[in-house]
Image (cartoon, helix red, strand yellow):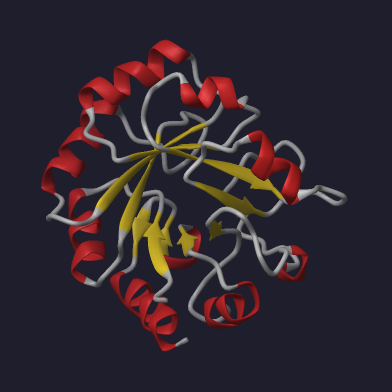
Length: 205
């Protein structure tokens, strides 16, 4: 099975088009104001409108107000919601859209319990744990902590780039990989050459 690729932290139409042309399966749009990769609602709507067919749009939220999420959903054509904070399953499910839940891989965490807790999630996104930082740490975690047979698709994130993604896939066998900082020229600005190298490494495995 081919590992899917999501490029997160898209802030410009030209980057979204480059990502699509290079073969990514999905883009991520960050609706979290403290992030250097945050986008406004109209900015995100313009980016999604420019996407070609068969490239999915994912909206990332961190403990967002319910009304804000609903406003984004009404104005931006998102295919999937991604929740990166301490959201409960009930919170995630109230929007009647497919979602995945991010899990920050702190020590002692049981992934099996997360699978049960978020049983209606389309996937779990596994990210590195850093106190006080909801994501985008640029650091990896021990991929050996992921059980061999998970009952839910796994999206692997956290410190991935062209140099380590093939090894990560070989060890963890994720459904998809998620990269942001590892393919950037600067925060929020993507580098086409780095994206191409990353996707080539994914396809090589």
